[in-house]
Amino acid sequence: MTTSDRSNVSSSSISFHSPTALLSSLPEDSKMAPPDKRMQLQLLTIAGLVVFFLGIAIPFTLTQAASETKVHGYQVLYSTPSKPDTIVLNTVISSISTETYELVMTTTIVDIPKRLASNDTLYKPFRVQVGPGAIVITPNITNLKVPLITKIPLVKGSTAWYPFDKYLTAVETEAFVGTSPFMGQKAEAIDVAVVVKTPEDFNWRYKVRKMTSDDFDNDGPPGTPSISTSLTIEVSRKFNVYAALVFVCVWSVTISVGYIGRY
Image (cartoon, rainbow, N blue to C red; front, side, top):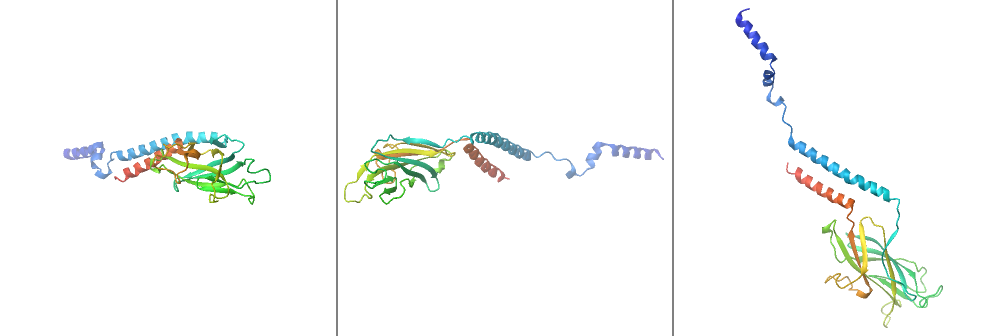
């Protein structure tokens, strides 16, 4: 073997065992690509949303589980003192619908003054009006406790302010002697004592007060009820952890869709 052959073998073995030579001999597409920062950012965003969701959902679930054993029943929102000559009514605000834009109330008669009826005799027929609804009590009626279900249209409020939306309406409660306002004589009014209640509601908060002239400005309630016999009902959404969670989730999805749509 000549000297030139030995040098060729030596150089070839050196180049074969050289890491630099190995890397340079690999094709360009097989080299390790740099990490995709966009993918890392997306994974970091998803992880942050998961942590945020669990951080709200777990305390909320534990709070609800602890309060399930407590049953408080009805909450009294408003009441007027009763007298011996007043009709006592029990009104329950059962629900509100932002789709049909109305409030649902159920009214029952609790007590009738003695000048109108005794235990087994009705001396004078009378009617009770709650908003647009009315119930007539005559000797032919078989159940004095029959409920009067009334739907009250909402006057103010909009879902555009969700979850900070608030609604106002007014309800007029009256009672008169006679079965109809068209009896050919002036109706004799009967004093009414009202107890307004609502079952515990997870989504809504109700407030009831005497109606004032400033409650509705120029947006008067339907039928323009009398201020002296009307109540203003204010309904607002309970801004709790659940509402905050829904609000954040809706906007998170919106932002995520907008972000993905860019690529």
